[in-house]
Structure formats: C-alpha cells, structure tokens
Image (cartoon, rainbow, N blue to C red; front, side, top):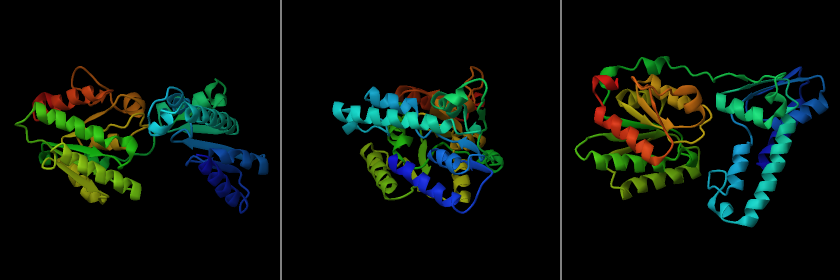
Length: 312
C-alpha cells in the first residue's frame, strides 16, 4: 500500500509538471496526490469519484480482530507481533487518508456501501455541510437484456475475475453439496472469468484441481478471457448465477447477470445488499446469502424449481 501511495504521487507530480489545472478530477484512487495538487496549485478544485476506499475502518477491524481476509493473511492474523505492527501501520494510513479527504471540493461514490465508508473515513464528507453523492457506475445492459429466453439451459454461471477475494472455491463446494442433494439433476456449472497475470493463472489451476478432487470434472467447465460475443453466448445458456465475493462495493457483473435473465445468488453485503438485489416473498428477483449453508439452500431451491412458472 505504501508503494501505491508513492507511485500515485510520482504519477501526479509528472502530470502537474506539464499542466496547470483548474480542476483535478480523480476517478482511479489517487487520493494521496491531493495534498500535492493543493500545495502546487492552491486554487485548483479537486473532485473525487471513489470506487473503493483506499483503506477503511473495516480493513482495520479485520486486523484488530485477527480475521483472515484477503488484506490479512494467516501468517499475520496468527502473530500478535505482526498484527500489532500492521494495526499501527493501518491506523497511520487511515489518519493520512482522512486528511486527503479534507482536500476534496466535490465528491461522489459508486455505491451506497462506498458512500457510507467514505463518510466514515473522510470526516469532512460525513457532515451535513458537505454531502457526498452516490453515482452508480455506467452499466449498459441492452445486449444482456435482449438475449433469447428459449436458449436457457440447466446451467449455473459464475462471472468474476479469477482472484482470491471472489472465493470461487466456495462456489465449487456449494455446487458439490447441491449435486449431492439432487443426484438425478443434470445441472452444469460454468465458471466464466479473466486472469490478469501469473498469480491469477496459478489460482485458476488450483481451482481446476479442486474441482477434480470434488469429483466435478464432468459437471464443471472453465471459460477464461472470453471475447464479449462468447460471453453473451454463455449468459444466454445459463439460468442461475452465483457470486460469492464479500463486500463487493457495487457489482456490475451481478447487474449484467440479472439483466440476462439469470437468478442470481450473491453475498448479503455491500452493493448486492444495499443497491442491487431486493429479496421479496412474492416473486424474488434474486437471493442473498451470508454463509455456505445459505448459498446451498438458495441454489438447491433454484435447481429444484428451475423451469417452473413461479421461478421465472
């Protein structure tokens, strides 16, 4: 994280050396360059469109409570010394990040979850005089919504980058449990996603191995780095979707899957909970799950009721 801070300041300094801006609008998380902008050009107005807080109280809480998360691996969580070092490191970053928020003249966030977090870590924007606005990211669903209904098959879709926080391993475990409950069902599982580099490739290889360990090799297919047309074809065939990332700040992939006519089961947190999925007693448009057991329950319901009029 410290490397990212230094990198953003170097990048911004390079840009500011070439131009004298009236407005500096950040949409990529260059928060630690704000002080530099104000120092070099005090009259410049700074705008921020925040997709994800650089650091949040939630990230700090994971370290304090010694929870194993993507931002807090087992080695640190199990070590009191390393945990304490990281706590002070995070507290320092939270303090500095809050100071950066004070430099912002107008601000937006991409979801209700992000808005709430920015209000918590940027005190200036948590008060009545300075209201941060929620501005959902652009998400065109026209091509997804126009997919033909007659091509739908008994297929479960996962659509997410192959990254640790997406928790594909949980998806495979849930699918295995539902198959055991429905031995005669012919449901297939398509994992569609992209890899950014060697680490993602290694994670994907591990997922392939794990699917074989679970005995799912005949039921599971992986589709990697598909062109858009091929992606639409997979969505056209699917009927159910699963998304297991916790604290997904918005969730464009979830919106796209819902627009494609897929019954989506997503984590009961952040964007899916606050902005996208609304569970209803009558004709639900999606499902929210907080645990492996809840994912199994909802997927089992979908598999058993697929094709019934009340499921549409």
